[in-house]
Image (cartoon, rainbow, N blue to C red; front, side, top):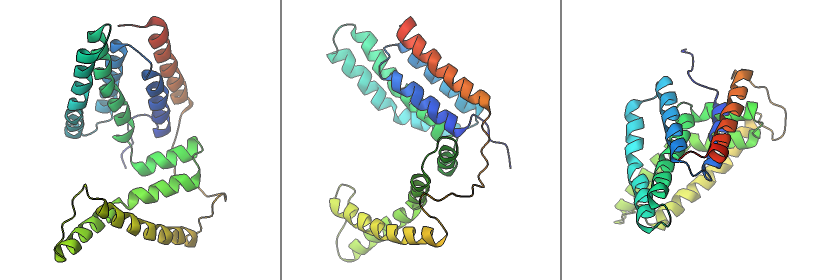
Length: 225
């Protein structure tokens, strides 16, 4: 098995949240572009799918352009500055999230958060079970559509009746899932044997603290354009 490239999933989650929160209050186009550049370099280093990355960036283009245009037309004060702040912020947030989601499987992320950041086991395994049910939900969606067509009905994505049927099915599955977890020995609050290996060197925590402190210092003390 090839060694995973990049930082630990828990570390990247803390970096994403630690920079993402002050990013909401920062008024610097330069720092937004720095975040975008560093995130892209990190994604390239981790060898994520270039095609998927480009598709995501293109999909976000209307949102970024809409933010840019609305502040340029309806903003007050320095409209150009405001437009570039909020337009670039869309991509800053997007690329921050991509550093976590595109380089780490959901299972590895949840188990890493459980191991290093004390995420409750019930919450972690419950979310993992929900993600594993996505394939069955898609299959059930097609079955509901086929059943409705046999009765001369067509369900569209905007009709609440479709989602009501999916929710009812999911609620039925939740009881079966709880019974299955209990039969496999899962007990809420009980001590569990952990076989998941997720190395986390101390230097990564130091790097995390350094990046967050540096960003906050630059955003609120230096305050570049």
